[in-house]
Length: 137
Image 1: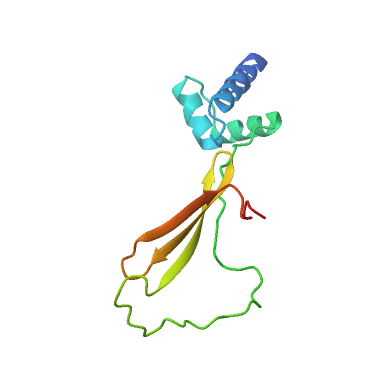
Image 2 (image 1 turned 135 degrees about the vertical axis):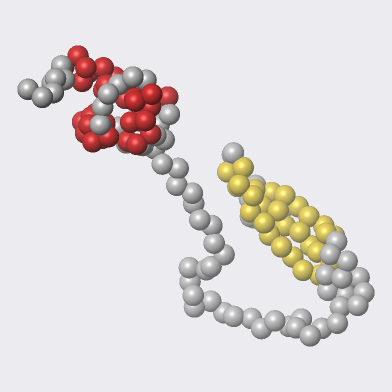
């Protein structure tokens, strides 16, 4: 024989160590676990690690980032013309605008509404709420 077959103890030790690595760092895939096993003194191939992880049902936990867009789902919405185009805004309190910003926090979402003066770029007023509905309805 040109190689020494693995014993069940060696296989079980590799599986146990692979499980320990998974429990410590669940985002590691086969390649990272393989590197960790080699660093820890286990002589094992990448395919063997992948096979053992599949046997054990270990899959890397991937963090999928949610993409927030401002593109409306309903594309048949009414389009408004830009009424301020070409307007010379020369003094304060001539034109105001509003803005609603959604802020993600640990407990969910909060909303900040602001009124902004276009000439001075100053925030004239703002409110932060955990709901989009007015509180005094």
